[in-house]
Length: 83
Image (cartoon, rainbow, N blue to C red):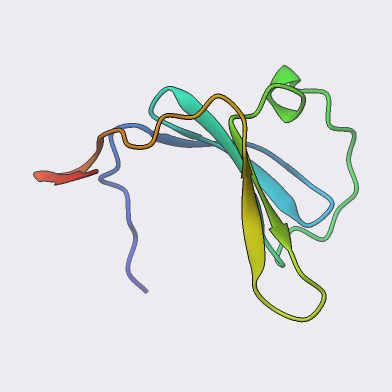
């Protein structure tokens, strides 16, 4: 197993109902995660103030819904920079 522990601006903040609330730099994103099988209260304010939410389709795939998110920002992993 490879552990990706070199992210400088990434954090999993909360998980519930098949989704995870993540911080990527200054932005909060909600993405599906099939390993999140618990239904705990979504008390973190980030669930209501996210910058992007990926909605999974029942047919496969899905689409992003964005809220006040720039077209591009930088994220760093070890010595790499992603735009």
